[in-house]
Structures are given as C-alpha cells and as structure tokens.
Image (cartoon, rainbow, N blue to C red; front, side):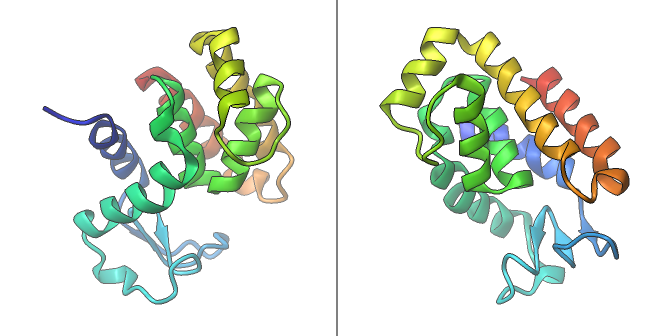
Length: 157
C-alpha cells in the first residue's frame, strides 16, 4: 500500500519534470525540482528519482511538518514547501488560518486548521500562496505557471 508521502511525492515529481536550466530561474540548473542553488554539492544533472524522493521526504515533507496534517492540507503544504520554501510555506499556512507565523506546525496551527475545517483552511492557504506569488518580482515571467500549479494541486487533492 502506498503511503501518503509516496502519493504526494509522486505528484510533485510529475509536476517538477526533468532537467531544466531557465535563465530567469534564480535556482539555476534544476532536476525534479531540486536546484543547484539549494544543493550546490549535488550533481544535479545525474540526480535520480530515488535521490530526489529522499531529499523531498527529509527536507520538505518532514521539515515542513506536512506529515502532521490531514488531506489535502498535507499535500498543499508539501507542494508549497517545494515551490516556495519550507519556512515560507509554513508561515503562509499560519497566516491563512489566522495564527502567529512562527514557522512551526504546532498545536495552535493544528487547532486553527481543525476549527476552520480542511476545505476552508485549504482554500485560504491556496489564496495566501497566490497573493505571495503575485507580489514577487518574477511574477510576470513565472506567475501564470505558479497559478496553474495552484489550480492543479487543488484539483488533485
């Protein structure tokens, strides 16, 4: 049986694609969403799916606290951590559900999500993510793709 992490990472890997080196991407050379800027010690060009999955589990799924959440918020947070950074993802979720943004999925954040319900909390989180994207200086270049990503993630959950 597939674990929740395996289900989520399968969707992330499918979305992130293969080897990319877009001149406007501050991450530089990227494969499966793993960037040379974030992981300068890695041979990005020869990164395997298994390597990428292990990085995602350790540095995004566990580090963000997505494993503490119920569907679909776990997937939304994991996707945000991958695309927007772990700390920012958690703070965006916390801002969306109305708790102080300390960057930790703790009892206050969990209680706020429970109080709102996963549908409401999820919608608020995705809206918060969209607002963050729209404020970025690279929105004109990447904004359409980022918003498309949000809609696809919401539709998959």
